[in-house]
Structure formats: C-alpha cells, structure tokens
Amino acid sequence: MAGHSKWAQIKRKKGVKDAARGRLFSRLIREITVAARQGGGDPTGNSRLRLAIQTAKDNNMPQDNINRAIKKGTGEAGGASFEEVTYEGYGPGGVALLIETLTDNKNRTTAEVRHALTKHNGNLGENGCVAWIFETKGVIFVAGDKCDEEKLFDVALEAGAEDVKDEGDGFELVCGVQEYEAVRQAIVDAGVEYESAGIQKIPGNLVNLEGDDARKIIKLMEVLEDLEDVQRVSANFDVPPDILQEG
Image (cartoon, rainbow, N blue to C red; front, side):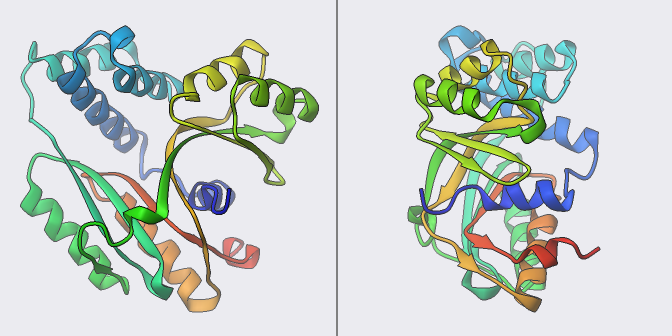
C-alpha cells in the first residue's frame, strides 16, 4: 500500500495529541450520537455505533458518557442535531486535505475551516477534487515493546490484515473496513495490547515535504484538528525526521 497513515505516525512521533481530554471526548460523543441517530441505539446491529463505542472505551470514556450519547442519538435525550460535512482542499506544497466534520451549524464550520486554510497557506477545493486519493481502511498500531513481531504478523494476517508495516517504534496493521473488527479482536485474543485502533483515510500517494513547507503543513494540520467541529483530517504528505524533532 502506497501511502499508509503518515499523519497518524507523525502525531505519534511528535507527540501531537488532541488539545485536551475533554476535546477528545467531545469528538467521540458526536460520533456516537450520529451513529445512533442513523442506525439505532443497538450496537449489535449498527457497525458504526459499535466501532464508535469501542473507540470511546479505548480512550477510557466512562460508560455513562457513552450511554448519554446514544440516548441523544435515538432521541431519548435532548441535544443538538449534527450534520456530516466533508471539506476538500490543499495545503502547502500541494498536499491534498480531506477534512471530516460533524456540525450543528454548517455556515460556522465552513467559515472556520476556510479561515484556517487561508491563514496557513491552504485553500478549499471543489467536492471530489482530492477524495479519490484516499481509501478508507482499518488501522491498528501496536508499540514495538508490546508484542512479539513474528506472533503479531501471523495473527494479523490470518485474521485478514492486508499489510503489517514496521514503523521503527512499532507496527502498523492495515485492513479493510469489513475486516477491521475481526483483526482487532484477534489481536486482543492473542494477548497483544494495541496503542491505537480505528478507521482512517489512507492516501494512495505521498507528497514529500521539506523545510518551511513541512513545518507549515504540520501547523495547519494541528490548527484544523483543534477546530471544535472537525472529527478527522487526512492528508497525503511525509516530512523528514529532523522536522519532527523540532519544538
């Protein structure tokens, strides 16, 4: 696979995380609410909700928070109605950007995304201008000190993983969306502790950036991900290791 989830790797190596625990929980709650609204509150028959709940549990969200989010989605509790809006555009160096949001005010979100892009050397594009570059995949990262390499490869590939890539500090497992739950569960059943797991947009090709463009794209990604309505930002770039070592 050409691109892999480079932004996820960069965040891990640079130590870039969500602005705060509350910000992460807000993002997860929105996803659970929308999943429950669209497919019902029973996770056994709603794969999107099942994945959202598992991701919330992986991030230590209390069960009460999860239950309240489900009730908001099914209409049992009040709350805002969120709309899924995806923005496409470009960043420094011609990097393709796919910005997925859940918003209760599309005009506000559009203005915030546009402002962030314009301020940080990017611009919005038309629908479809970059979406074709990305493919939706399940991605699981296992730290190198948490597993036996040979065992991990055998378990992951047998469960349906398409690729297992050595990232130096650990291993990235990539699989199809339909195979994701089986691969994740197989890892758990084998006694392997994963550091992160979820659905990501994987680019088919990467733009290699250096110098100022590399610094600018990292800053832009951080600014976009800090916007309240943004759920996920995907991009097709890679930067040199020395850039990640900068403050």
